[in-house]
Amino acid sequence: MKVVKFGGSSLADAAQFQKVIKIVQADPDRRVVVTSAPGKRFAGDIKVTDLLIKYAKATLAHQANSYADDIFARYQEIGRGFDVDDAVLADIKAKLMALPTKSYQDDDYLMAAFKAHGERLNAELFAACLNQLGTKARFVDPSEAGIILEDNPNGSTVLPETYANLAKLHYPNDEKLIFPGFFGFTKKGAIVTFARGGSDITGSILARGLHASLYENFTDVDAIYAANPKVVDHPAPISKMTFREMRELSYAGFSVFNDEAIIPAIEGQVPINVKNTNHPDLPGTLIVPEKDMTTKHPVTGIAGSNRFAALYLHRYLLNKEVGFTLKILQILYKYGVSYEHMPSGIDDLTIIFDRNQLDDQTIDEMCKDIQDTVHPDDMEWIDDYAIIMVVGEGMRAKIGTIENIIDPLADHHIGVHMINQGASRISIMLGTRESDADNAVRYIYQNFFKSGVMTADTYQATAN
Ligand SMILES: Nc1ncnc2c1ncn2[C@@H]1O[C@H](COP(=O)(O)OP(=O)(O)O)[C@@H](O)[C@H]1O
Ligand SMILES: N[C@@H](CC(=O)OP(=O)(O)O)C(=O)O
Image (tube, rainbow, N blue to C red; front, side, top):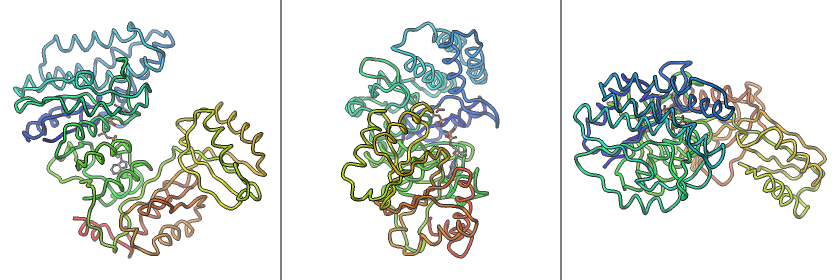
């Protein structure tokens, strides 16, 4: 049995729905389908999830608005394209209109419930379209399947009982089960969502919980490429990579697959196949537990992400001082802030944060507290910090990779603030200024893939 997930770009309108339905019908093993909310139809379009966020904010601000009509228009266009029953569309409209009238634990839970309706209504509509075309399908609510998540409304994680519940779920041979992605329920029954891009996580949880033989993840690119195609022109496609490589690359900016979504697949050892809805016959990228790696090709991919900020601290004899780091960690704990990395030198420490979890007021108060508590000689908040991650299982056995990463950056006068080739032996992490990040990815890519180090063609040939 295969679990198959379709992203927002694959379900953006009736024409895309048509392609997805053909894919689902083409393979009887595709028995469990996960849908995202309708995504962008063209550059500059707005995803339904983003419209729902605006709708929630307007509701919280008691502002009159027409977002429910705008959102409904997206579903109506799709439903009309398949002649679905008027009652199905009327039900979608009623659910959208009713959202502001329901009661919620607090504003964050309201936001989660609004957002979740993007996938919920799309899954209901998708099931209706399949049935209309004669393919038996049933919408499955996450509460019915027992997808139980932590009490964290907009960045939740799965609880272990979900897997015990999924073990009891029956999936018949003659009926497709259609699950909405992105959300689940708390033990108290409130809707909570994963972080943005979290429909990938739902697919992965179902693949693990239902012991799928494959998790197919359909999107709008032919493969996962060795660099983001929006940064590097025609990057080399990756035909096969390991779970660990994907985890590191998605963490550092390969947004094609959510970084948390890899975890359930690893736990269940379910291979993932990322494929293109618009070219379903192409093989895409296969993500597997282990792969054969020749030492000739150290790098699989290069990712860059601007979502970071850093706090740099300098104090002489830092290495001799007992409890310096502990005091800082206690301050982070007090503000409920987690850190991503903490590279250090003899007298220096840099703490790298995910900028998305911090507001300006928290940064000010936290920095003041650190200043007053540990009295550093020098302290700097770097708001425009980027992380570049160069990843490849082949790096473990290859000496000299670091030169091929650093040299092109030095040649182009790109400052590197941090290099970390620590615990993970399959990646090297660099810190740069945000404005340098895209160029850093381009120059490193060129050095490995376009010069004598490795070409896109030889890379593909060996990866196959
Ligand atoms: N290394 C990469 N390879 C392929 N796509 C990438 C990569 N890095 C970033 N992307 C982006 O990820 C996008 C697909 O992810 P996403 O927009 O979340 O799709 P979906 O709507 O299917 O969920 C691609 O269109 C591409 O712009
Ligand atoms: N619709 C949600 C969840 C998601 O995973 O979407 P997509 O598959 O379009 O990335 C979002 O936009 O965050």
